[in-house]
Length: 69
Image 1: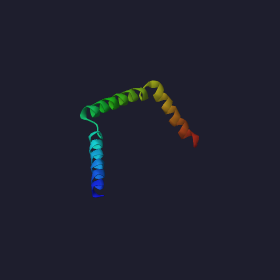
Image 2: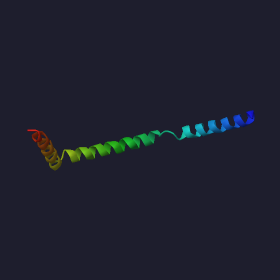
Image 3: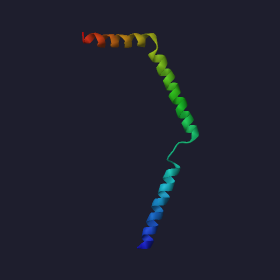
Image 4: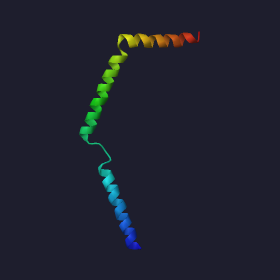
């Protein structure tokens, strides 16, 4: 019985070690993620600050503030 328990524990420890190796991202993946996030932020900023979107957002806020009056 003791041998079976030891074998089972070795298998569990081996699986945990394997899972740890693949658990995180490497530096290049972090860099690509940051570049993608910055690109998305720039695009979103350009869209939100465009004239049409700014006017629409101002209209929404104005209607929301006038709704209670």
